[in-house]
Image (cartoon, rainbow, N blue to C red):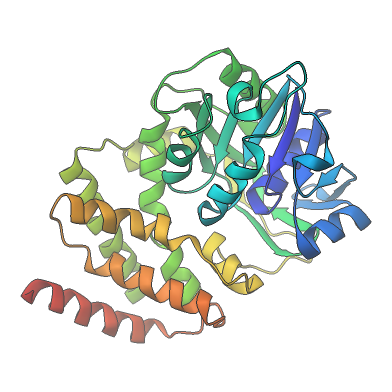
Length: 340
């Protein structure tokens, strides 16, 4: 199988690099300065064993490959706000011996949140969800870092909306030969919703910086509790904290990487790169949507969604709002919501 990584940033670059390192054929899809750096110096993957360089084919879209192959596997790893454009670009791409990518090829959505596979299923026939537990970063063109050890990450995968098949098992086997654990599960959405709850803190971290103070941790817990209340009201199952800990065990420890300063998660990285967009609409915004559908107030997630989008739109520096100021805003938001 050939893996086409659509969005070779932190997650896509790490998965692509690790697959290439274990001998698999990989094509990277990237744009702008990142694409130029990948073409010029290769993918520089910083991991606990050192900096690895992979000189891989890099394209901006399917036209750079001609007809796709029947054994291609598409890995969608762009941020969710970029999914529709990517799906519209790759879905109609012709495949050798007839048909299109949307008709014939498997698409694995290796992204935060739960929306992308729903978008994909509108056009793609074979869509797979991936619950991405993969500590990684991309803030410099051509460079991706992943600090997990002894495993790089854990990637639960399965068909969307449910089920498993041979394709999922084959991809999982390739990933497990590439520094990942990749459980194939029939209920991948249950793991993705659990990950969604943890990702609700992404916007908070992006706006205020590291979540280390007692007041920051307390606010994180309130934001997650709000999300859990919404999922419970909606009747959406999600893996428990204890179940997640049992699966992860001691398989992924974060180790310092030489020459790689400590950063933040995916939303923090978006602000640091000045992309102008952020995925809060599909993390905190997912909770806000479900809250409105099921009549559950979500004032804290509403606030974080608005703040994250404002920071991205106005190109504000990541971590530039004091935690105390955000806590003050949160208290006001929660009070206004209670009196509404």
